[in-house]
Image (cartoon, rainbow, N blue to C red; front, side):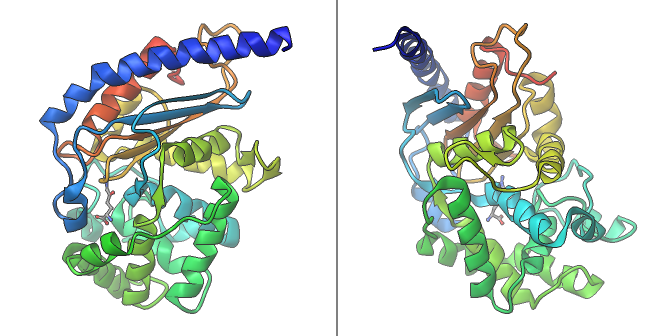
Length: 329
Ligand code: DON
């Protein structure tokens, strides 16, 4: 075996070992959180699961804990939805219809939607903005819109994802607040399809299943400004990657985004099922990080805090960021 490859394998082994020890250290933080209850089918998750995958652009793959488990990506889909619609309609058309400003409110908050002038939704990383963006996906029916989204996901993760029908149906039947948001958006002229079509597309994209490897790969593609290192193809435009990462940094962890930026410092997006997708840009060679070529990180830890972010997952990302110097600041 060549000497360089041996060194890479040795580095990967050491980093993996360290990562495993941090997973063990962070798991107990889950006791202060709980699995989301407002989507009935999510209540059955094991709150003490904690998994992570980190992929870097040199081919390093680090995994630990329940990294292989599949879960519904929930709000992480908002990132994919936004990139897809920007790719089809252009950034400026999308931003005419949804803003890029953080709210400081909960992800499903209604209160500021009516006060904002102009009334367009604040940003695509929270429910109203994501419902607006879902309504803009090209297609005449929910299945045509979804098919476009699924095909886009396939280009990112290299396989056709499944939609968890049980999770979708359980949310569809109890989506009173999201339905209210969608009707309100329709009334103010910020919904570009029928209410029920936008809602079905939005809730089905939330029910797409992935594991931490899939999330890490999307994070890595964002780190490489839209380039997929596996297929060697540019999947989306660099300008879209830039706006998306700015949105993730300022709005991706909801009203916890400020603290997350200050103490962890990487663009990231969470979902109420306990997933987090983070992206780290390449660093200068002067940096002390062992991972200076850019990486993507996928996390799964279903016990969430009051804001909706994975408790143990955020602790683990903090550890990773601080110990391996991955903050962008
Ligand atoms: O629309 C909802 O409420 C869920 N399907 C997704 C919300 C979500 O993941 C927000 N997360 N922190």
